[in-house]
Image 1 (cartoon, rainbow, N blue to C red):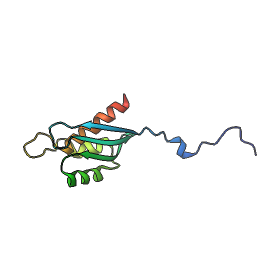
Image 2: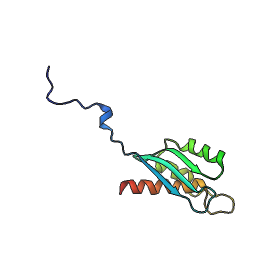
Image 3: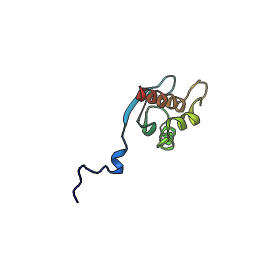
Image 4: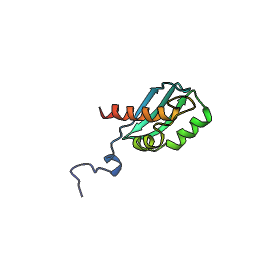
Length: 103
């Protein structure tokens, strides 16, 4: 049997919108946060500076979460006497990346 056109496989229906995003933090020990965002899903989070063990743990915990999920858990978290934290900065960063990706 002869097909007039190529078949579209299910994997081809998914459109990848992956983008690497880097955010310069404000008011915290970590200087920078980098991550991938793909259709509002965050992966491969890494922090430059800050509390190494805690930030590695946060990176693992949020891997695969959506922007809304990360915001709901981390936004507003503070560190010591500061009015923000590395976790709060991550929530701000993923929202900024999401808004930028949507234009």
